[in-house]
Length: 109
Length: 114
Image 1 (cartoon, rainbow over the protein chains, first blue to last red):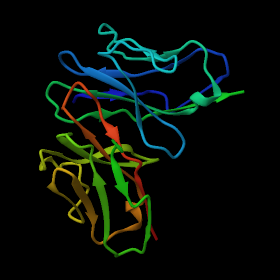
Image 2 (image 1 turned 180 degrees about the horizontal axis):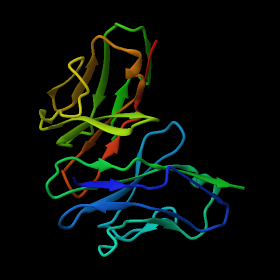
Image 3 (image 1 turned 120 degrees about the horizontal axis):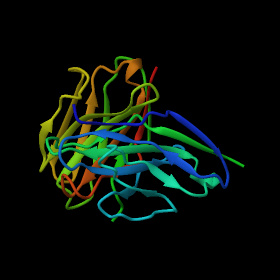
């Protein structure tokens, strides 16, 4: 089945430390992958898309086809980065986006 | 654009009552999705529409759930009768295309069935 997997439900780091939120995918062909962020009791917001190769709020994510991964990284975490992060992807044979289970990031002062 | 608009923001109802959740997608978006979010199960796709037509409703948990999209600017998700296990946050999202854009989500409706 085509899906994305986020192996960590919880991740805690100290302010200023690097952070990496893991996402692995199992898709045939070339998937299109996204990261969404949900701050406390707010709507999910698109953080970045792999096709854009952009950096948003200091976050980047690189598609690694060899490892079938799309990990989200930030070199220096800030307290305001504390949120729920969802990896999501389209597959060639899917018409809907599949979300991972999410990782709750807590950045401690 | 005001984004995807959902109403109500919060709904508390008694078990057995009918609940109707509403969504207004972004104008021009051809796709509309309904998701349910719970602590235990995360984000679950319930149903999605393309040009007002339901495409995949395999995520609808049971016959108590139904969704309609009578026109391009309005969709409803109805639960009848509601049960406590339906308590969750229900999100609506819309997208202009299937693949390359991603979704815009509404603020969600927090449903509590007591």
